[in-house]
Figure 1 (tube, rainbow, N blue to C red):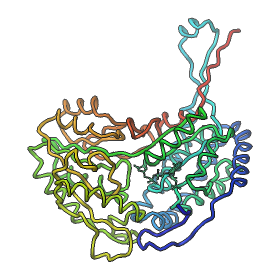
Figure 2 (spheres, rainbow, N blue to C red; figure 1 turned 90 degrees about the vertical axis):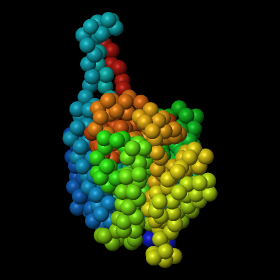
Figure 3 (cartoon, rainbow, N blue to C red; figure 1 turned 90 degrees about the horizontal axis):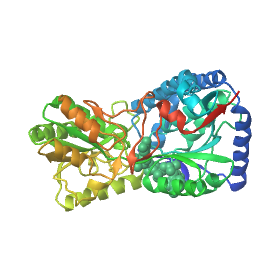
Figure 4 (spheres, rainbow, N blue to C red; figure 1 turned 30 degrees about the horizontal axis):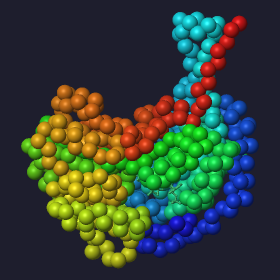
Length: 464
Ligand code: NAP
């Protein structure tokens, strides 16, 4: 894939970049390793000042960087601004809390004595140079949610961003430089995916985190496994959105629309499968389809737009293939199911779509629909809802709508996912761990869990 900014709203190539050669990549890794040797000894206070300054700069840049993101991957402008603001919040959150999250731990006196020590503690030390392979869909947020905790823990970062967001990738490197992080603490490598293996196998690189598709995750994890290096994987999702009889149907249907089409439907934690109790199915289906049909699809730079284009032509082709397969096998199209004709040939638009009568014979039942396409299922009871919600290779998050506390307890216990959001939609927050199980990956980002992923928990055992 060429490293280029191609506007998804027009298909126009705006800027292309040459990929770094092997020699330059080696030089950058050396710079990162040198930076780590000194940066690891800075205090939490020093790092908090640097990250705080980066947050301030990003806040000032919010409008400009939002336009860059929208130009590169097509999300509506207001959502791009909100993404930048969320990054600022996460940076401040980690700047303020990293020291206490990584404070030394002191085992109980009984355990210390039992181990034969006079004193013992656990200290958290950084791992070193961490490679981050990141996707285009939240081009700022995905990187910041890795970089903020990693830098606060004393690690340094190498970013291999998706090839279609090079300007955002370069902006990030520049942001950390302007904030006065020492040279080499955060570098962007403009490289294709084929060059990732060489970076990952370099002995100066300690670990990797990847957010993206299953094939990319499998490849990076295999190489890292071969090298015995730590990885965190944040992969795809096909989150259930379960509606039970006691739900507030109006609010559930309204939220369902947002949960499905946020970021033009290209979010790992978007609700994708809508599983509805039969007693409220018809009512919910009607409101949901009406809401999806009413969305304003169009130029993402227009403040009125709610759904922009898909990020690439390939992305739209893949989505169309999933819908065609389902329709051929008997799915009913409640709305959408085609390209919006009124927008013409330019841009990779797809109409918000709701498919009913979906069965497990259809690809869309098992695969992630990365665009504004929802599947609807009717279930007779709670057991069937739980079974269907778990009938997916993925396990990222889940949404359930009910006022029945016994049902909430059952979902919280039995849904195979990294999150259970009750009467609301999944949204990441710095304070809560984020990540999945099954084919959605492993490891956690955000919260105390996220900052511990790239630390060496070291036992210091001592006799006087
Ligand atoms: P992708 O094709 O896997 O790309 C993600 C990143 O991996 C890009 O930087 C890409 O580089 C690189 N890459 C691709 N193949 C690789 C390989 N074989 N070895 C090393 N690196 C490789 O994913 P995408 O289509 O851009 O993003 C969408 C996917 O990401 C969806 O499945 C979505 O659910 C998932 N996602 C998950 C989360 C989460 O937190 N769980 C968040 C956002 C997105 P190039 O661009 O150069 O190919």
